[in-house]
Length: 253
Ligand code: UDP
Image (tube, rainbow, N blue to C red):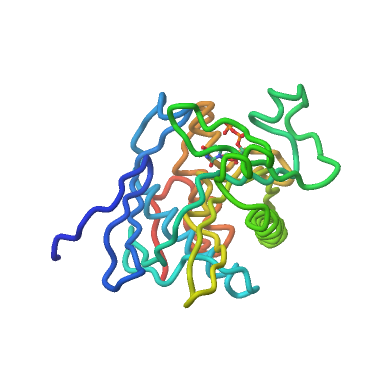
């Protein structure tokens, strides 16, 4: 394969120049990191699963009219995406308290929130991605008030879609993070969902047992991350149903 120009390498993904202007190739690595990359491991098959799962969610979002960067899966680890200008914020939606919200507010993990809560964190590894207010966002110019309104609306639509898809698979969507980017269609600017949606960026609990099926398995040493992600993929029909926990990920077309 011809060598492509690397545009950016992050903790779990690499972006390469795409075949046409305005496109990129997103490559999913097997690297897992947590606590701002203080904890690291390689999880065999994670990149393959997240490529498939992100494709599954992004295609579903597009089918219900939620714009996103996904164009097409290229192979086991790569997908073609629209190039966007990433807004430097992590947009988090929470349905139940967990993780940093539980720590910050002293809420037991799993406490139902009165309504979905949208939070913004500044994307800055050196600062540990601090929580910021909408006042910070507009005052420092990371996004306009109109962008903020659009981001909240996009995030809540993604939440409704993802909660329903997950519930149908017996999974509770506790919280998740998305990233949002700007694209220009002629002179018209709009915001679309970018980056990835996968168990790396969601909290997913089995509805019946509460078993964790997301990156907390790695963060908190709760077992095999690959088994957890394989289970999510199997339940969503991204893997054939006869794949057992012990099996290596086997993909269907
Ligand atoms: N999250 C993420 N990337 C980050 C921080 C958070 O994908 O850099 C996701 C995380 O997996 C969870 C949600 O955002 O689904 C809320 O995370 P939280 O603020 O509780 O932080 P954590 O406990 O993961 O440090």
